[in-house]
Length: 201
Image 1: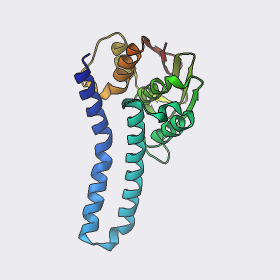
Image 2 (image 1 turned 135 degrees about the horizontal axis):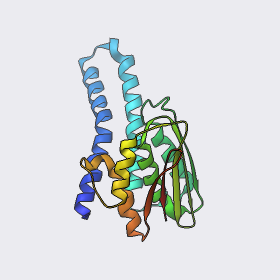
Image 3 (image 1 turned 180 degrees about the vertical axis):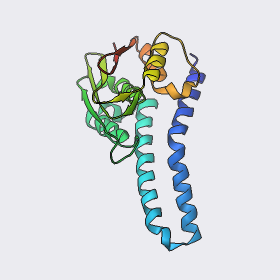
Image 4 (image 1 turned 45 degrees about the vertical axis):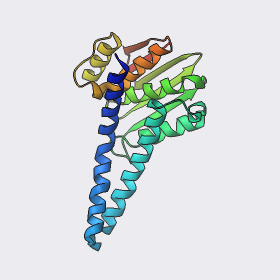
């Protein structure tokens, strides 16, 4: 896959993941401009939730897809940013998803974050995502209890094998993970376990 195509896929996915909350902020601002104080409580809540989601997602995307920066070498920052990203998925207050992220090898932090994002794409509801980066490898798995998408798993297997489905932006995390892993002379493996696992080595 050419770099320009990969960039377009990532940009499209990021825009998709941000546009809903940007629209909510715009609507809240319009209500404020109308000056109807009856909606002030709703406006405040919309702005609070949407700004938190936008900030958390942008920080995560900057680290997962952007140029190398010092945050990627700080395990505490990587873990915190990943945890905040997870909270933005589904119902921000109770999405039923939790993560356990271990970064014994901090040089694998970007691959760990892309693995995390790819695994979240397979979740329909709930689940625990466990990811461990050590000795140049990353192993991640969604474990029970979780409702997972068999279709997403099958499409990810196709991508692992070099076959790209339609609607590429939907699979931007696993496509970016494959491309970045290959640039580091590593391979990815998508497996069906009691849940779904991704291994990079």
